[in-house]
Length: 118
Image (cartoon, rainbow, N blue to C red; front, side, top):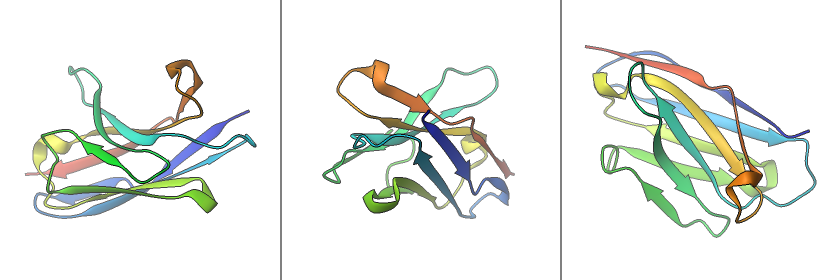
């Protein structure tokens, strides 16, 4: 069974930085895309960043220039470096791993809380 475990969340003042990590396990299949969503109270889930297995990345406009996504294919791990954090970045951050083109092959972690104080 596929499992994704996030780490690295916490409380940080505005302007600070955090690095999130997410390790996938439980499948011998190669992972295609990996990425991060975030869910804030009262808001829709937002796709923050994604990276495919060739290293091509995409970012939400709200985080471009501040967040950087990367991955270690040997470790089935995806990272999110978050710099110049803002209060509005406060959310639960969930990672995902997708094993095929169909979104039905996507698995998500339980999330890690990121809280940015004003």
